Each structure stands twice: as structure tokens, then as C-alpha cells.
Image (cartoon, rainbow, N blue to C red; front, side, top):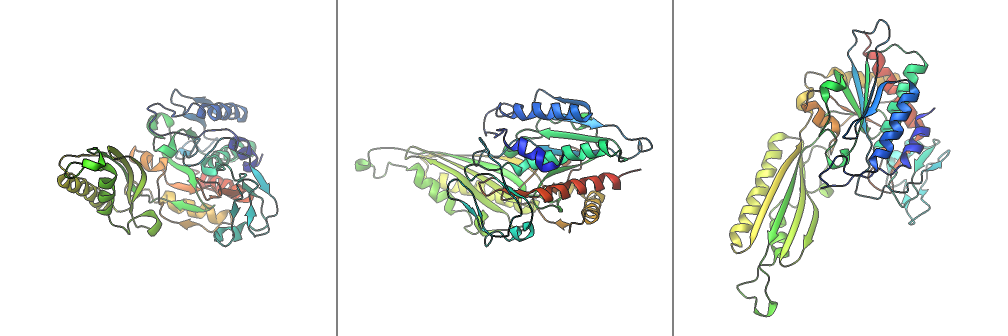
Length: 405
């Protein structure tokens, strides 16, 4: 079975995660895909397929004869889709022999415009898969799951020599909680790769240092007719705080290694307002400077509005895995070799985000990220090509062969 055929099945299963639920998984629908994957792992003949109490699916393949001394390799992907856009009722559409032009989606009048997305040129002639325009597609990261499952099938069916192979599919990656309950020692891999990136052949081992920041502002609400010297408008205080942050350091004005402050949510009224930020930077020192600036901004507006209350809560989410992979650059070198062997030009680029691999690397499992072949994640213009998914499977097979004893 080709990877895209598995993907079409997985994409239809609703697995959207949800923030601030206080449970794992954050949504019960993720169990539906977990159970399907366990059944498929059993059918493939994997060892010990199962799902634990935290909805983490695992299984493994023993080393083939003569490969017992090869390092155990892990491959991971996540089951949830991003809460940023609907992932329920996904209807995958195959655009066969894509002609290189705009792709019209049947619902909501949406277009994937060739002029806006240069990567479409490389998909010409391929079978491009999209949703119908009303939902995201879920290639992030169900394409990665399908590719790992197809890798396992090929290793077993073709009898390819390999060391121990460990696979895991996690919940809640999109809300930053994927590795919260992951048992690295029990997983059994010495090195691993997440398959959760973009273009086939892309390799990522540098990611943002990341933190969340929440600002709760309690104002003083009185009748506006008698408000002079008394009212403290929480919404205006929120605007003042945001104005103290650099206007150029926002996602819409940054790229590459440039960090940012992203105001993700602002809600409230005169009496109370809440602001949710994410803070990002690849450089650890600049990351700490950004957090310190957020603290100074909150302190300044509090000092200027003493009868209001400004409460800042910050929490680090993950760190740049580059720091943990410095002694394991063979993972990057072999991924590049594997892409070349698969006929794909490798690209190494920093992630303007994070993956489970970032946290796993700090938990003792060196774990860079590989592309899935997907694009435009987290929205209705998401797409992936069936042939690019085949290439990713080839890359994974070559990685396995490069680590043979």
C-alpha cells in the first residue's frame, strides 16, 4: 500500500486537539485514530503494538539477523491536528496530473494560487491532495504517520536488513503537550526522527526557543459620565502594553532566524482584559531578552496604572534542539545522504516553530525533524502530493540502511 492511501483514511478521522483542557489527550476523538493505528500495527506484524493511558501509540521491530549491534532508530509523528482551523469532516480530494495552475477548492470559494505558492511548480504532473476548502487537510501530521507505517510495511515485506526500529504516534503535539508523558527509556531508541516537516527532503535541527505569556488586566470600571480620575480601562491598558513591544518583531515582519512576539488573543472589556502571547527566538540569549522585555512592559503599565492590576504569567514551552544535537550531527548528515539516494535535493533549514523532537532531544533522545511532503499547514489551503509521500518513504528506508551495522 502506498503512503497516500493510508493518509486518505487517517485524514477523515477527526483528531483536533484543544488547549487548556487539563487532560491527556486533550480531546477524546484522538483515541479513534490511536485504535486504528494499533490495529494496523498488529496487522503488519509489529512487536507489542499498543496504546497507553495517555494515548501514545508504540510498537517496534526487532533487528534482523546480523544487525543486532546497529543503533536502535525511532520514528515519530503526531496524531492531532491544529485547533487553529476545523479538522472535523475532512474530505480529501485528489487532483490527478496537476497542471501547475491554481487549484480550486469546491467549498468556501477558496483557491490555492500558483502565484502565491511557488512550491506548486514542483508538484506539476503529480497527484495533489487537498481538503475541500472548509477544513484543514491534516497532512500535519497524518502524512508523517502514513509514511512511517509504510516504512514499516516495506521493511517487513521486502525483508530489508535493519537494526531495532521503534515507532510512536503521540497526541497533543499541536498544543505543545506531545511528549508530556513520553517514556524515552521504554521507547528503546538511541536516536530518532520526527516526520513532521514540510517539503520532502527537508531536514530541521534548529527550532525556536519558545515561551507563552498571559497577561490578565483588571481595570476599574465606573460610569463613563463620572469616570474622570477613576476609570482604568483594561482594553486601553492592553493596547499600551502591546505598544511597548517592538512593532517589527511580529510574525508578519520576520523570517529565517528572526524571533518575534505574537499576540495570539486579546479579549475583554473595560473591567477585565486578557492577552495571550507566544514569544519565539532561535538564539537563547535573545529569547531571554524578549522575556525580560515582556516583564518590563508589564511592570511599566502596572506602575502607570496603580489602581488597576496587571498580572503576567510566562512559561517556557521548549528550547532549540540544536544545543542537544551538536554531538549527533551524523543524524543530519545521514538524512542528507538518504535524501540524495532517494533522488531528492536535501534542504536544511531552521524551524519557525517546534516539534515533539525538540523536547525529546532535551529528554535524552536526539531527534531532528524530517519533511512529510506537505505544505500550508494549519489551514484550508493545506496540500500534499502522493508522489512526494512516496519519496519520503524512500528517504526513511535509506536512513534505516545507513544505520546498519
